[in-house]
Image 1: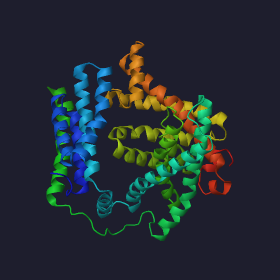
Image 2: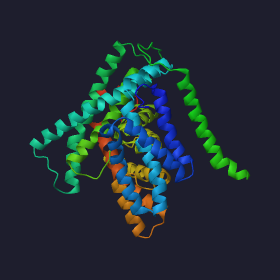
Image 3: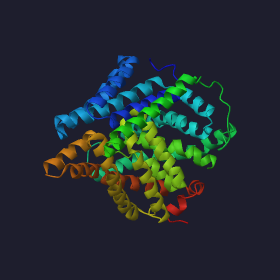
Image 4: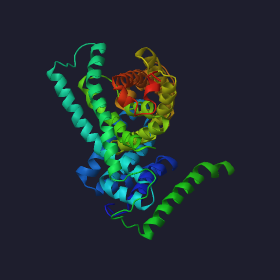
Length: 226
Length: 189
């Protein structure tokens, strides 16, 4: 199961259920199982795209956990964080934002919500590139990493202000573009190619939710009555 | 919500995430990851601010999944920024910086239980090291965790408030007037 053909909601459900179970099930056994599954899922996206980023992200947590806690606590928390990181790395590698937007629109979500995620994902690299250009321009004018805290804060202001102001000036242009395309809040749109959502996957999502609820009851409510 | 305010949310969220390049360039130990949330709230009120905070956390989570549990902090930041905007605390650096310091305390109080329960206080290298320092100073585990969060949040939020104040005052009045809260936040309405 690589996750590439699953419905976006199924991918989200798996990525949410694994960390939830890692925290609910008794440590370290429960978290060891969820971490193994999450790492196996990440590995299905390839070593470079899935497993390696997960291991690189989670490694510092294990180091700092060992620095702050004893070994049993380190293992318990470390396995939970590993589950969370690996399942999200798998999710990011498997989930196509465009398919998610189509699925959300098909499920009756407002087009505005779908727009927020998609527009932010597109705006971040643009603004980062612009920030880098501003940094280079200010370096040409003598910006330095040296100096005291006050000098660096003044330098930060000189870098951040043009970036933020230029971004705010774009808001009107974006609003006009949205209006032209008919994205009026509250309006329902028809998805062009909604991803198929088979009954098996819908049942699997409900099953995941029930498993999490059952684990929660078994862990925290049942012991009070025994 | 008007189209302009809808268009503001992704721009403000992207500002939070793109400012890291500016911070890296001047080698300051800051995050500035709530700049967009505070700015959006000061310009357009709590609804837009909370939406910006949630979108920022969601997009940040795709980069590093450990950000998602801290979405609560973004919501608290938006509500605090709204109260500050209502009180006109963005009118000058003299009022904005103490307000930012107050937010630093509130943000560390909010993030400490999350960091302690979910991550064992290992959210970032810097926080983990200051937590280790707090532990070495003899603080109890939760106290050491708060110390780590406090050291990172206190100055960061003050600088963020100062930066947002500078932006609000640098905006042309005509542009500021297009956003419902901007003039009130700087005490001009």
